[in-house]
Length: 179
Image (cartoon, rainbow, N blue to C red; front, side):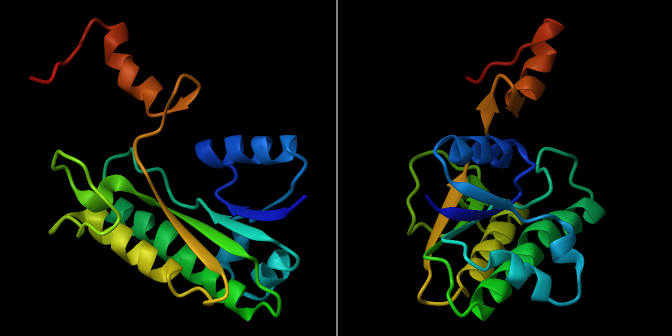
């Protein structure tokens, strides 16, 4: 049994992951938003004591209109949250064995083809710049903590994610095709 701390546990991916971890008998500590709004990281550090793993899924939903104000929210909800999380992990006398930090395939840009971990990010793309900054913050975690960076694509599920929004036009007989 592991103790797992999770940011973004109330989101679509996080809520499903919490259920799955509990199903396998792990203890889950949801890291609530208020822990990241405080000036210091003392309470956040305390919440991480005894955790074997930290999973960082925090971030405002990306499937909204990107106004300048919302872009700022996207950055703060990812980069600043990750910064505080890493600072708290780095203060622990016994840090977790692993930190898994989410990112996005937007790192690669809209070009077609296969991409790999060593590919450079898309130039002049807000999402790619966000991913680079997000991953850079995660990379500052204590060297004794194994860091796993994940780059999620569009999440499709009949009970949430992007699929219900993508299907909405189909209910009105509006369809699009590529080609």
